[in-house]
Image (cartoon, rainbow, N blue to C red):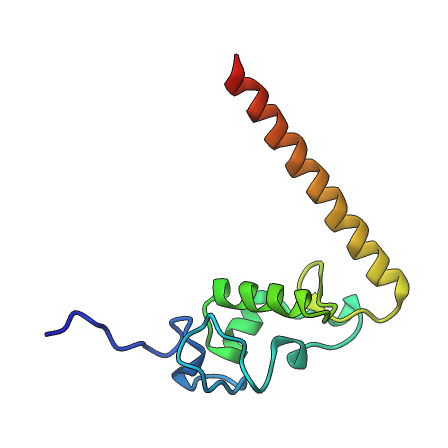
Length: 121
């Protein structure tokens, strides 16, 4: 026995064939050629799709979906999140998301600085 396990449906591997997102690549680290996460989303916070629903639609592990969303965001696809994932309906939603992300970044930096200071004592 080689010790390599065959992937199961829903194990986070997008090429297992489960769900509506079609992927041909052999690892979840690669961006699917067809059916990116943004294709499963609608505009407006009121249409937000919970992560659990994206897991059901794709058959991918939630961590794989989060990584894919981050990839798409860095490619310029404005996937927003608040009680689920959605595309911006207007500039206000986009600006509110950006402000929230910047606030989170400031909090993380403050925490890192506090831990760093304590380590010097």
